[in-house]
Image (cartoon, rainbow, N blue to C red; front, side, top):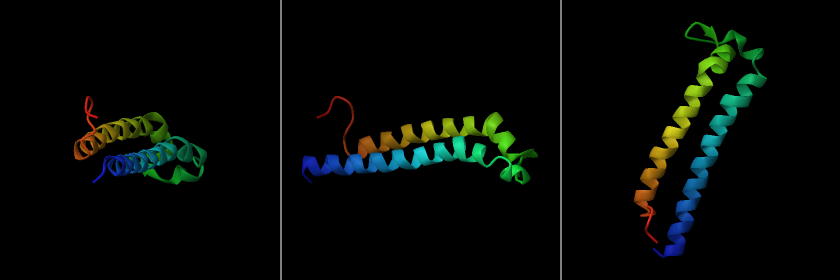
Length: 87
């Protein structure tokens, strides 16, 4: 596999991962808040879903998104040998 093709595949996977995680972030941040009144009937651990997401849920999702991104990018870097110091 040529270097240019390898880089193109690496960045395509990187952008796809980033896009999916940004979609999760957007849903946790804006969609739940926008539809808070409609989502009042859903509960999580005994609390209405919008209240839980505002108080703790969104923060947990953010930490999970950052952790997953770091883990997945480490695996992707190893797969494509794109670690720091290598060219």
